[in-house]
Image 1 (spheres, rainbow, N blue to C red):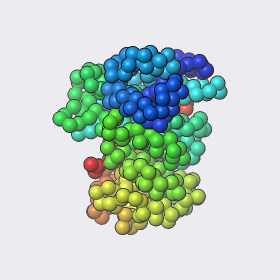
Image 2: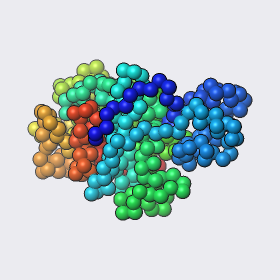
Image 3: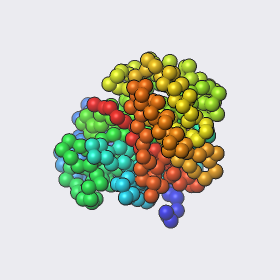
Image 4: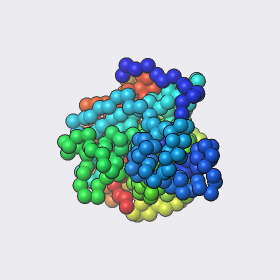
Length: 395
Ligand code: SAH
Ligand code: SF4
């Protein structure tokens, strides 16, 4: 990456891509479209932007020429710039995306998005913040200062960019035909989204929730709510509101079975201890055996990986519709932990499995392009993202 950061241009026309219906109506109102017409016009824009992936107002044939010209005079259909793209041997793709600066102080946030294809799904791992205010001791992002929250628009733009890169709009061609993008009947190139990139989504609740509204709108990007997973380190007061407002799947970064250890690994635990966290899971709106909560458990050598820990984990999740995802720790420069040995992970996994839980241990994907968990470059405060799948059951 050798380009210099973007410079804030106060005269730049704003992009409409990534906006919510309410924001589009506002943008139309600002250029004089009367209120009674706005709903219909928003519907048209919506179709072109999100269903067709239009990159120019000229493509919007059912919009009058006069309005198209006016739109182009004030707005763009611009996407954030992809400043680097990498393709792993296993088909994992990593894009470095630069968001235009939002004000004169902002140098332009950079985030990485990881795309993981499998035969029956394609998962996009996206970010909700640049950096993170929390300081989990095993997470590289936790060592970086928060730059800022991403807006709903920037969150949605990550999917729009991914679909651009995958040629996933009507009439577009795929970038390659190497079998690395799932293409079967009814399988969409990006079918699943996980909020497992950089940041704590529940500390940016409103923007994440608005973004989910756009991502799941049936007349546009049309993702299924059950194929969107929000991962949280345990912001207890926001868990029920998430279930009520968005209806998405929930993943909890658990990592420890007692408060003493979890206080060290996930310091937020001091504020919201395990008891409160598990209670919020037990009462999560919509949780059921067909909509289980994923509990993520990073395997740290000699720290949380004993058979006793495994048994305790099973005991504490009793009564919660749960799946357990064991994640081999991905080391990063300066990390104070090591990944558990393979035999230890297997023993742990067997105990969990024998207790009746599927306990997939995900092979890290995209290691050759440093796209696996904790491997994304961070010296320039970029995203550390998850390169594994958390979803096993969905609609
Ligand atoms: N802030 C949210 C979502 C982003 S982190 C959360 O904490 O859930 C996504 C997942 O990556 C979390 O489960 C986190 O615990 C895990 N993770 C962070 N660093 C990791 C590392 N070095 N190796 C493996 N998993 C890691
Ligand atoms: Fe933030 Fe999640 Fe990393 Fe913890 S694990 S520091 S909450 S991104």
